[in-house]
Structures are given as C-alpha cells and as structure tokens.
Length: 410
Image 1: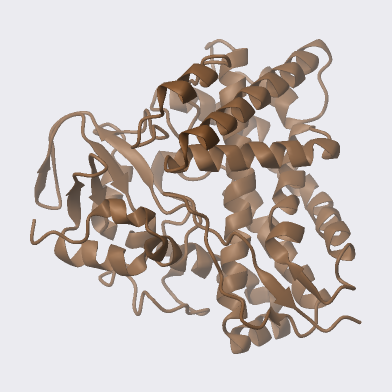
Image 2: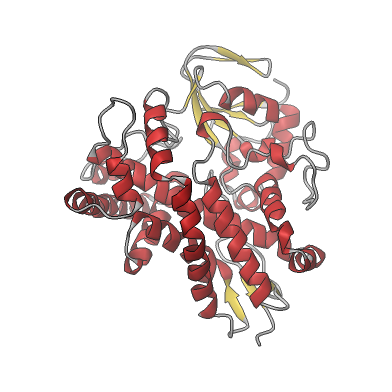
C-alpha cells in the first residue's frame, strides 16, 4: 500500500457525510485495499477488487455483515437481550442457509405478487401526492419519500396502514443503531424500539399461523425449500425485519438521491418531463452515481491476497460499492451524472452475485411511478431557494434527511 489517505473514521465527520466521494477517490488512488486502524477493518474501494470479493462467497463470508464496527455499549446489549435473538437473514448469511432463505423468499415474492402491486403502488403515491399537490411547497422526503415505500412494504406484508408511523420509527431506530455514533442514551432508546417491533412482528406471525392471509408474511410461513424445515418464528422475525428495512429505507433514499440529482440540473428535469420513458435510466444512473447503500461488510474465511495486498484470515472488510461505481477504470467521467450513459448497467448499486438485492424490481417500480407522478403533477418543480441538502449521519446508508422543494400549484 502507498501513503495513507485520511483516516477512514473521518467518514463520520459532517463533510464526509455530505460528500464522501473525494475520500473514496483518494482511497482508490492511494490505498485501494486500506486497513483502517480506527474501525479495525479493511476498506476495499476499487471496482475489480469489490467484484473479486462479492463474487467469491466461499472466501468472503457475509455472516455478521450487520455487526457494527463500533461495539454496542453494555446498556444497549442489555435492552436487546429482552427481545428475540438476532439470526442471519439473507444479507448477513452464507450458503447453504442463505440458499434456503433465498429460495423461500423468491417463492414468496413471486413475480405475480409484484406485478399485482403496481396498481397499489400507483394508488398510494397518488393519494400521498393529493395530500400536498395544492400547497406549492413541501419536504418530499417527509411527504413522499418515506411514507410511500413504508406503506408499500406494509401492504405487501399485510400490515395495517395505521402502523406506518410506528414502523417508520423502527426504521429510524435501526439507522441510528447501525451508525454506531449516537450517544449511548439514544442507542438505548432505539434498542427499546427494536425490541418493541420484534414483539409486534411476533404477534402478526402468530396470527398468520392461526389464519393465513394473502400476504408476504403468510407466504413466508408456508414456503418450503426441499426437505429443510420451515422458517422458525425467530428466523421469520429477522427476515421480515430485514425485508422491511431494505424495502423502506433503501427505496426512500434512492428516490431522494434521484430527486437531488434531477433537481440540481433543470435541463435534466426538463428532459425527463418530456420523455418519461427515460426515468428508468435516470434511476440506474442514480444507483451508480449516489448509491443509497454505500457498501457492505464481509469477513475472510482464510488468508487472501486482494489487490496485491495480503489480508489475514478472519479480517473484516467494508466493500465500498459507491466507490466502485465511480472507478475511473470502469466508467467514463464517473463523477458526472450522464442520463444516456452506455455502461450504466455495470453499477453495483444493488450489489452483485448471490446477494444481489432481492427487492430491486420493487424498488425500481416504486421510484419510477413516484417520479412519473411528480413530473406530471407538479409543474415548475424546483429546489426551494437556498436549500442545502443534508444527508443522513450514517456509515452505510445515504439519502437526504429532508428535501425542500417548490412548484407552481394549479
């Protein structure tokens, strides 16, 4: 490795939360496989090295992918112990159990279930937009970005709309917990929220076991993989929690990042308004340019050589998808948003390999429908004067905390 770039713990500093990409560029150029003394993990920042990791699940394990680099305080662990144990669920699991869960979720999330949701997604987005389209200004994160995916994922799971606020709070609690840099008192509060939601989900699972309905929770209970046992309550709680978080937080951040990118370039906004068929390409370029999930953790099963650097057995790795998406050796003008980019399909915005995001089709559909409605219903849509976008203070999840906009109400 060459001279050390800035200590990676500086990722928590506000300037790196708001714009981490100059730091990622330095990592790629100066120390592409970099050991962070502060976080006690290896940071992998070049596209080809990232591919080498995520396409080799035998040597780079996903177990404990959600383990925070900053260990929780004893007070936090004590609260979490009051709930259900955390067990692996897809993203933080490895074959053969990952294969079992992936097959079960694929059966439960069959294409017919997703295609049947399109009208429901459109109806929810329309209802939300009806609530503020006449106002001429709004925080799109608060009024659309968060409630839309929260209600959609709740509808798929069969959870009542009346619980959306409660579930949103749980998502926020999990974001705070995963960041690991909040005061201990706040982490304890969030841990209580997580335990509360575990018990909430346990109640819904018990209800579906007594009387199955046509929803995702019932489908997960009933799905089987070969001759393996059905999912236990503990497995279902972890799996449903993960699917809810991914289906809510990631989609909200993707929509927010897309809106920031589009609204900062009026000509791009005009092009999408005139040719809404280009919205899917704008979504893909946003996934490359400003990924809602910046990276993911892996652990080495054995000693490996990665990018010419020897990494020991049992080492923790952070593979920076968001850095690989801006690798100059792969993408032309990687720091620029290009609506007609020919190589956008190479992006890592939804991961790659056996852990490719299982909810990617649903997220793309939600964001596409939301953008179509916004461009159709809000003429003159623009950032509010003086709006300075501020991002979530989180290690791995990137999206605007709020997005103040204006338009010309009818």
